Image 1 (cartoon, rainbow, N blue to C red):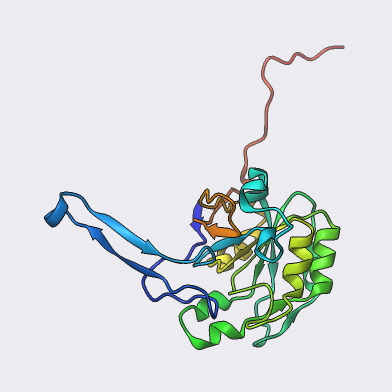
Image 2 (cartoon, helix red, strand yellow):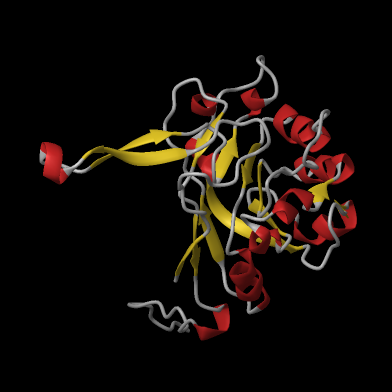
Length: 231
């Protein structure tokens, strides 16, 4: 099963305060020029996107400096749903799901607020939780909210911890409720967060998707062929 984890890119969609507004409109039409082509105006952090470390520091790696393996792999889901507005996501919530080499996705439930003023009042990742994450070897973190830090924020402590470890951050995900359910059912989850290939960029929009596999108990036994019993 493939699950879309992305928000649609449309004119007037929510953006982080101060970021470029999104405008999508026809540039060419079949009636006028014989083909349909959209004109796009948007920021690199529009919609469902990833942040490269360069986003917060000129000395850190840009998007095209990062290995593609950073954007695709098995996922672990933190169920942080039920937290009140602007609540911290603390180390005890993330600790049970820290496995090196996985993509850590944090489900806050805030995707349901998309398009409303309440979307800016999302829970946020503490610096201590971010330090625990990178200390475990994880280098890709996603959240179904506008930012891993409070909105608005001046210091961006979680960004600084994650980006300082050359980690990738995915924001404005959606559909993580389905991944929480799949994880509870014992189903393997693989996530793709591959961004647009923007040279020297701080980040880029992504078409984020997850592949949910069958439960291990549902898989037929792996019977080798050609083996002979000896003795």
